[in-house]
Image (cartoon, rainbow, N blue to C red; front, side):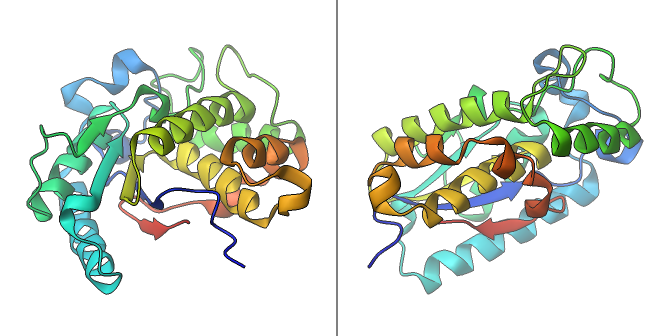
Amino acid sequence: MDTTSFVRNRYWVLRHGKSIPNEKGLIVSSMENGTRAEFQLASEGVQQAELAGELFLKALKANNIPLENVRISYSPFSRASHTSKVVASMLNLPFKGPQCKAMEDLRERFFGPSLELTSHDKYQEVWALDEKDPFMRRDGGESVNDVASRLSKAMATMESEFLGCAVLIVSHGDTLQILQTLLLNAVKQSMASSGNDLAERVEAVTVPSILSQHRKFALLTGELRAVI
């Protein structure tokens, strides 16, 4: 039995390459700051994005997927859009064309005004709280569940707009950890308990015991990973 028959496309995730905020050790999670050009990729991150593009191209060839069936959906944050632009160039796809699309629901997790532009060492505190209660919002930031809700909408949009495509989702560490948690656990759901519909399956796994484990799916900067 095909356990992924509930999706219309194949999905890969790519965490953006090493960014200037990564180099500076800063949390940049608000839309206002995240879209600033000064927070795009560092030179090492550009190299990571180029390598990811090469690896994705190899995966496409290995799976006999033509380039016209590729879609790149990316966070509007500058470090993710920069990564996507580099990958698109490696695939010889026009970044401004219909195959590449920014999606606001794929943005970075907002960690709250008290953590914005502070040391990324604070992530450890957030993740410790996530394990205790992934539905809890800290200081005006997004909970794991908040991010899961908008990712569910993003997946529904991609599933409605694309058919038979290889979709590369370019986003951020926490966002992609949470997305993988949802999708990989959705695959495990039996059809009897949750139906053969992506939205129903995702809803079934949006529970504290599952969401609290999102750190298991951590990605390095520039890391490409096939999901479903």
